[in-house]
Image 1: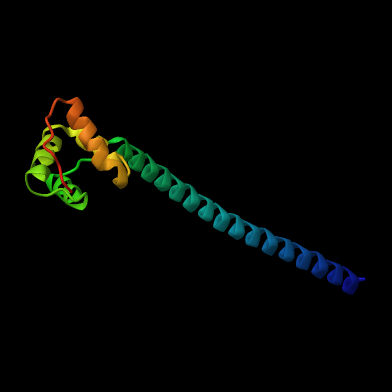
Image 2: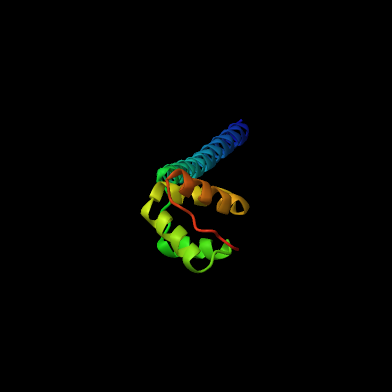
Length: 128
């Protein structure tokens, strides 16, 4: 009878040890999953902050330098006094400068002449 009880005790002890190991392993896995979830939350926060910063930057108007204007006018094929007249007009009028840069390149020259005419600038006979 003693052997039988001892065998039963060993089975119960083995079951309890197995159960304890499973709980320990479950806790370990739960902790690891929690760590991963916390890392994902932190990464998502950084991504949201980055997106918010990008949205703020996107709302700011782009600033075009005098060199940008000069290069664009050169690309349009303007030369000599004509380029200088257009350069002066755009550098003195930031709104028109932004508008011209916002137009597709193949339409910029026509738009620029329209802007200048509307502003009362007498455009010299431009030969490209």
